[in-house]
Length: 354
Image (cartoon, rainbow, N blue to C red):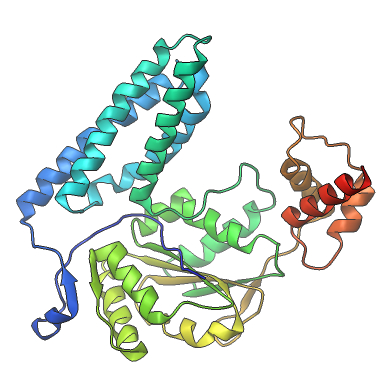
């Protein structure tokens, strides 16, 4: 399975570690500090124009409330990171133009008459495209669902373990499939306190039963964070470059999320374990993996939460699909079955019975 990487910034520097390894890298042309400062100021100015427009118009243009709220959320997420971005000049100029055009479009939204559905649909499509463009800056983890249950307590536990300076370095969230391990990890990455601590040093890698090669993961990390791709000879070379990569970031705390780890990937996970100050690893797995750390057991949903998610996922507008509670309990009681699978199961039965 292809690995996902996130969460925050994109390109940082692109200077080789030493002269004798310089030829191993595809390195972008060096730029002066003045160039970076000018680019950063221009990008921040365009960002402010757009953010101010969205904050002002999201309550003045009710026809566009949903998409403007989505844009507002994206911009809030970007705000503490916007001054850290360092990207090729052409790409930076593209983002600046998109944000300035976006600011003009947002201000036009309040002028659209509620009966003018043609303009409304056209503007909505453009705003959705803008939101998608902005999310490219984040290399974001998957969007969280609109409803979650029973995450407050485990989220607090993870923050206590991973945000404290004297806390543990590795946490393994363990539970059967469909219990919300990945959702908890994604929610943790998006938490305000977590983002404040780790800034742009949050990385989300999906491992899965067929894990990606270490070479691929390391190359993607370098490309994502440092705007260069190391040419790696073998796994040992990749492990060395990974350690160098993390040490180069050690001036700030680092969070590495390794999602959906199976026993087959233990040798890969070992390569990510280093004794680096403020370097934290969050692992999700169906297995306990005691070689790395004691497990944190995530409890399955109780009946009430399961039915809440089930009704929401079934997509009835009023949230009450009229499905008897005993059916939900019976289906959910089956081993390691997620709410998504419950909905598919029930809807297929319902259609078959028709």
